[in-house]
Length: 172
Image 1 (tube, helix red, strand yellow):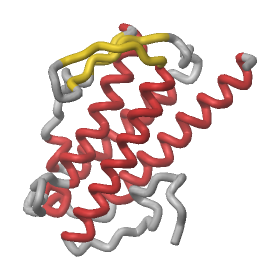
Image 2 (cartoon, rainbow, N blue to C red; image 1 turned 135 degrees about the vertical axis):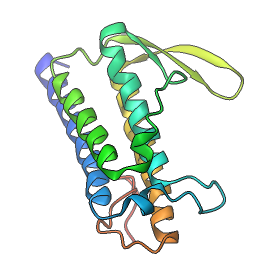
Image 3 (tube, rainbow, N blue to C red; image 1 turned 180 degrees about the horizontal axis):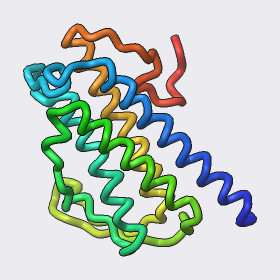
């Protein structure tokens, strides 16, 4: 594949990530801090804010790898203020989008090392940067689905009917 075609593919991937994260901003603009930080819904007792922060921490781990060549998903900053204040969640989303857009000229096919704990301790494996970003995007969609469940349980009306749906999920 020629470099121009590869760049176009990466551009579309970043734009898809941006579009999905902007869905988070739309949600956060429509709820209160109390709804955002509510952790009373079983079975996991996790808040919308906790899920947003978790998603953004994954992207931040990858953004940090642009310079170092290493992603460590086990070493996340866990910005807890972003879990309780919608304004901080929106700020963190916007900051993440801007940082991703700034790397448009990066070589997304370069090999990076990725450390994560898959259940039996930390393991380090090789990814490409584009693999890591695709993983984080899919991970975000998964957590947005969890947020959709929380929104429903809290009686909040979701403004975006596609929020939390994987684009490949058939519409009923």
